[in-house]
Image 1 (spheres, rainbow, N blue to C red):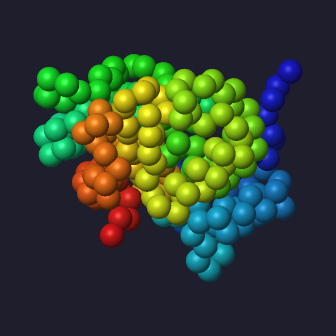
Image 2 (cartoon, helix red, strand yellow):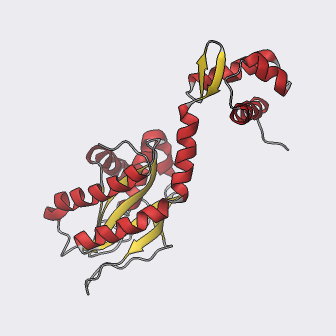
Image 3 (cartoon, rainbow, N blue to C red):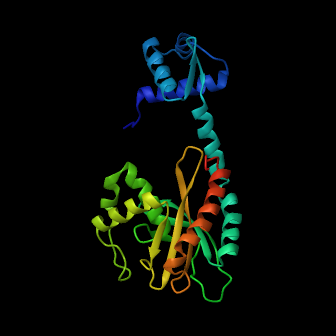
Length: 251
């Protein structure tokens, strides 16, 4: 069975044709050259123009800025880890704590990169680890963003009580995620491992899409609650630097 939408396939042909030709064309020219029905072609091109993928001037269409932005985001993400690694080194150098960068992996988070703290007593972390999102700082940042678009997603989470502080109900998690949305950062307050706290912030690309989360992990007796505000400012600054290099409009 073929799982494709004919008009979506035609829209892809139209986009590719305008990109290859390079000129501003009318829908009649495109319909003729691609052997597509005129009405279908007009509807496709009007829709793409309305969504910012095409620019329409005097009945002629050409590629719009949104396609350029998408292409730029794609290229930026290819070099994402090249941007992340020096940022992690800087964050660890400033805070003295282990820093890490995580990306979404279904309902979990993949810890893509880690920079270990040089201190004898520090929170260990390992690149390549898959962690539960509902009880980790990086995970909750990503879940908070998902909650805005798909509230039912968190209902698929299977809770495991890792410590006495682990959130284990949908109601409590939803409340926590809404607080994260307001404050702009997430805290893992000994929810994943006893004696370990984490603070994480989102990282954005040019389309204002969260591509991952930047965080620090530290022993709870060193990273106390009264240090949260200061630590947040530091992590946010480094996170914003990554976002800016990805083209995000961060003030």
